[in-house]
Amino acid sequence: MPEIKNIIFDLGGVLMNIDYDRTTSAFLKLGVTDFKEMYSQVSANKVFEKFETGHISEDHFYDHMANKGSKPLNPLQVRDAWNAMILDFRLESFQFLKTLKTKYNLYLLSNTNVIHKSAFEKIYIQQTGLTSIDIFFTKTYYSHILGLRKPNSNIFEFVLEDAGLVPEETLFIDDSSGNVITAKKSGIKTHLLLPGEKIENLDYDII
Image 1 (cartoon, rainbow, N blue to C red):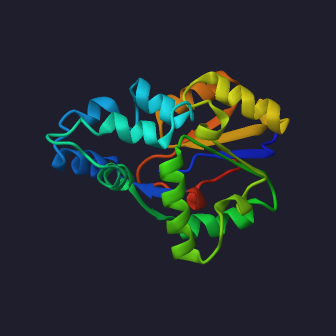
Image 2 (spheres, rainbow, N blue to C red; image 1 turned 45 degrees about the vertical axis):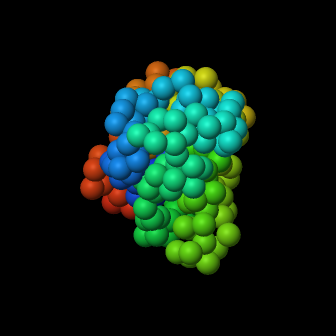
């Protein structure tokens, strides 16, 4: 069995605490009664897929959501409701990354968008005083910058090729089963991080 040399981490639900229900509730208060059908941890409609792959702009996203409520929504209302899911960073997990970096090449692969990235970067600075989470990784991959999105197989193929990784020597950790299933089909070793699990408590020798 090949030795693990590389670890690819998801962000939300793995290194950062998120709560999708908070965003669903925030939009519901604005009169958007079908938000869960538009977006959730396991699915996204075409507009949200395009937004998370950078194929539509922030303004386009705001315009799209403007008439989804019981009355017209302004960009600030949409932004705050959309960001409601973002909580805080798991600082103990980030401290553990420093230990992992001595043994593995670390990468980040996140489905995100320009609004969320701006929001979580501000939260990270507030929590730590540091400027970016990118310093913990050999390279970071964000869906809205790549134009690709999990769980599609092409994003895993891109990362493997771009970083020069051997799939069998690479571990992918994510909290979404759909993402893990696709990564496994690409030959990558995987671990589905369950609710309550933390990366610092995993046994990397037996995964």
